[in-house]
Image 1 (cartoon, rainbow, N blue to C red):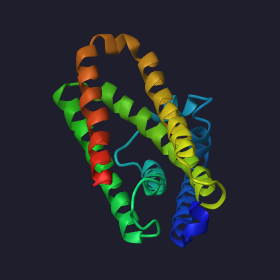
Image 2 (image 1 turned 90 degrees about the vertical axis):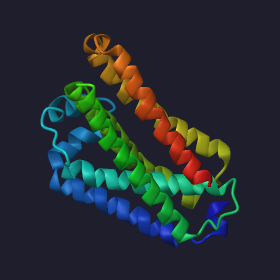
Image 3 (image 1 turned 30 degrees about the vertical axis):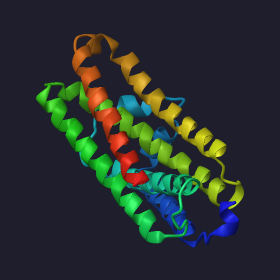
Image 4 (image 1 turned 90 degrees about the horizontal axis):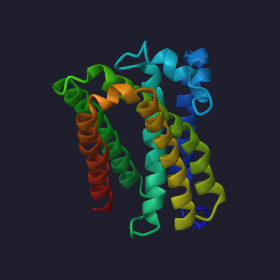
Length: 214
């Protein structure tokens, strides 16, 4: 039982930091945050803000930071179930967070580069916006989920798999919505889009898995 065998101090600090990042985002962008928070039931956010997207974007940067911290906590707690690492090791947790940050950032930059090379800037730009929006929404959900794992639930593989499956389904929803809304356009670039997905959606996660297991 995680909450009984390790100090939760570092997790508490990180969860408070996540709440602070989300609060700042809501304070700076109240209307946009309201639209964003209902992204699962209302596509208003995607339709409005996809047209005005900027890179980098402060709104996305704040929520992206929350996402990285949330994934790091979940990944660290999950990996502890099947490893000999010290579950209270701050250094290991920070290394994991840094690795996740670098991989996701490099992945986004590579996606933009590849879209330019394949001359699919407009469609890939919209795809990235949808994908990042759903991923940062997952970051919001990770705050209560991680709190449950750390302070309430007995951490088991079944619980971890359930949480991860739920988060992956939400991410899949975003991809399916994009495909549905751009099906006609994608048909003309189907080969390149499939190549894009295989190269930049699957391989980075395989690399991240290898880094974590080492």
